[in-house]
Length: 193
Image (cartoon, rainbow, N blue to C red):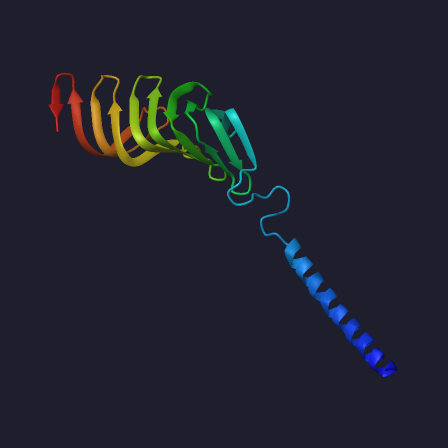
């Protein structure tokens, strides 16, 4: 009976140790959550910062190039990405920081690493010279200081001529522009297709 008690004690001690090891292993794996990362790193799909009625300023070589307002802003630090998803209204400036044009769109995305903005949804650009551009999407490359789209465009000149086409590229002032595939022109009282 003493011997039986010894084996029972030894068996229960081994079982206890095995159970303890299993519990520790489960505890270690249960505490590892892949969504929790070091501070400063973006969790997938969750912005690092949000702002309402936001105003941001974009620069190029120290000069103010754009002041952008939006009803809502989401910033994703790790991806260097900003989403402006409510009533985007952007003023653009030339190298001397003189106002040149205004852009309005439903939403916009900014790639901070590439210094690149894409405006989407009901995009309207009006220059200080009076020309107006309508399109569905418009990209602005702050480094090359160009705007462009592959979408359909309506472009109204200073002379009130309305040009239609697909694809567009220009400087941000809309001074040096090109419609890639013109599809029509409307002059005052004359329509050419």
